[in-house]
Image (cartoon, rainbow, N blue to C red; front, side, top):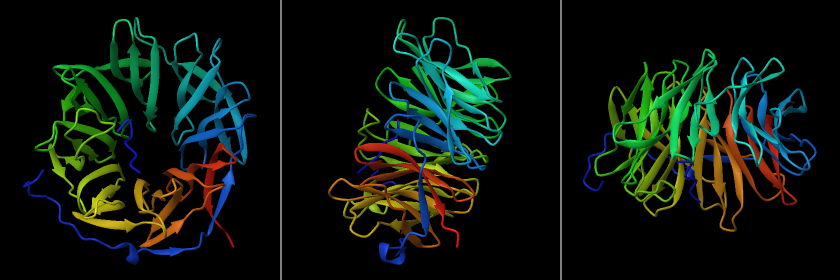
Length: 386
């Protein structure tokens, strides 16, 4: 199962590959406790982010709507909505406890909002813009996302800082831009969209957009993440539609150069996350075109393996302790979250038949969701204490 978030034959690979087969990643019984975070009165809840203090944000059903929540100290709090709004969703939280998300209703546009010190602030908009959706924020309180309007057709990435909304603009020849992530240095990555159907990753810094281009033999690129060293990862692909790319290949962009990270012998790979040590995770096809979770480190690729009985895996996040989390897929459609640490692959378990991991902080706290009696529940995995 391939998760394509948002998002060359003959080409000499610039990264050497060493493969640690799944047999080298020993499985162990879970030493982890799974906590159902509950709901705001409805059936479902979905977590989105966790900070180092263990504060978790996302959204939950209330019975008749969806509201943003903050979970801390074992309790889920309703963050409410803007005046006149019916719905809200929290999308990111930083170490200062600042939370960003959106609020609106079926009849009113979505506005980006900041929750801080118990207050909700509307971040404002651009003239004529109907929808503002934030995607990330850093510890300096800089917020990035996308602003759009259907009349006229217009979508631009933005950064909100010092109380002002700044338009990131578009790449030369493009008609649209989307901002996806920001580093602590204020560097922003996103994508520019062109009229011929192609898409290029960009870097915004010092008030300027830089087109990162694409790998040789590929027309498109997608930036997934940036670390505080300015290293950018993602994938470059041949097809026009990033949701169904053909021959996607993971890349690392640094010092002005995009490097092909290679594969485990198959045709495709994707890089999904990078930590400040430069360790990269994602997935790659092996020689039999089976998808495998992988770790790239010091120009080497390691196969992280799959859970017993599964037929594929992917890694989605890595913390500064080199703990990797992801999902392993089974033929019957089930999915289990896993933790990979020190060559050990651990099944984190589920509430029912399905579980997916989303993020891990540097304390090793893991968030995701799991199915239970047809309901989607937000969950927290923590290491069992003896």
